[in-house]
Length: 205
Image (cartoon, rainbow, N blue to C red; front, side, top):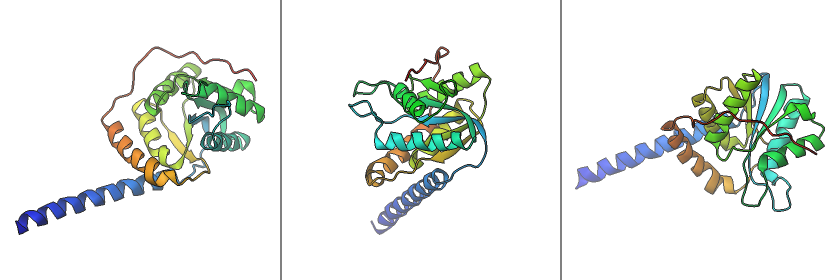
């Protein structure tokens, strides 16, 4: 019994070390900003409020992409997000927000079919190929950068650097980070979704 208990404790200890290593890797990658230039800043979608405005988390992502655009670190901004339960197309709301902030209409690319991270990665690959673009800076919350890069890599988008939005919330500790740890492990086993080529909808102010 004593030997069995030691074995269980050893396994539990090993699992804890692996989880700690994974958490450290998510934070290490996510809390760095690339200084490289890229063709596109890819803004990952998040909640749109019932009134049609971006949530604080989504606005922080858009503002970070806007900074990259204003510094001429990217030439285009690709916004990706599908129809949310609030009844708004995330991609369209994101595009309008950027236009109001002064981003040229022609420099905004919109994906309204990005219903999850992997689908966004697949759609991004198609949009980039269609426009003869290659490099990407992923703009998202710090905890989401690593999984986004994994999905993009599996869909053939390389290089894909990262730049995190400047927002930190308490729910990151008990919800977002544990969810990302499980999500990253699941994405390791997934292949890039396949589907028809995408058309990029126009965004009107």
